[in-house]
Amino acid sequence: MHHLGATRSSLKADHLLHTPDTFIRTPLPGATGVQFIVHVAPQLGARFTQMTAEFEVDGTLGPTPAQRFLYLLEGKVELTVAGRTQVIVPGGFAYLPQGTKHTARALTAARAALIEKPYEAEAGAPAPEVVIGVESSISTLPLMGDDALRVRSLMPDGPAYDFAVNTMTYDPGAALSMVEIHIMEHGLLMLEGGGIYRLGDSWYPVEAGDFIWMAPYCPQWFGALGKRPAKYLIYKNWRRHPLGAAVKP
Image 1 (cartoon, one colour):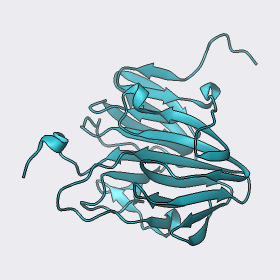
Image 2 (cartoon, one colour; image 1 turned 180 degrees about the horizontal axis):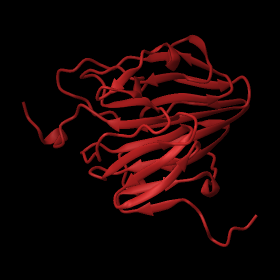
Image 3 (cartoon, one colour; image 1 turned 120 degrees about the vertical axis):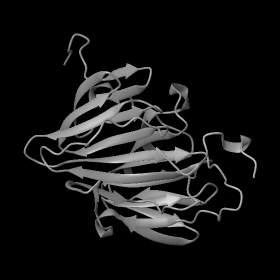
């Protein structure tokens, strides 16, 4: 159906709202039986890539030259790392350090969120390790003491790791307590529910299936609306000095 050029998607200098009515799918090298929706990439100015991978049965995802985080949205995927195989179900996730040999094969039709980023090594820091887990097994923490806004940290937090991935769940009517402006950039995938997102000087209705990219220093705020909780998966770069390699001990 034609909508005469109307869409909720919006691209500004410091943010992108990418809604399903504008998604375009593409194959990528190193994968068979998988189509990718590339939500954000360096071509837009981001320092990471976030995609949704849509697997056919037996579709296979091969290695990437960057580090990779996989969060399963639907279906079942068999992940093989270092000769060991584990089945990932919805809410399951895996972090694979840069250079880790692995394959992910779909046992059913499946969808996964993929985050890929070139690793920024830190002098004296240990090497990152493979992490495989299930979101539901991780304890929630209130954000800034607000029990109506709960965070689960899916990545380890330490000098070895240069990004973080969390899920955040808002009870109906819950909202961030402040407009945030900071150096980190975000990739955000709405998983459940919806609400209103402020990005820069614009205000957007958002719902499950939408993707948002926020550049560094983009003013940002979210409030949940409706009768069910709102939940999203969110990436941020983390634990690295803004001057990067220019910093000498």
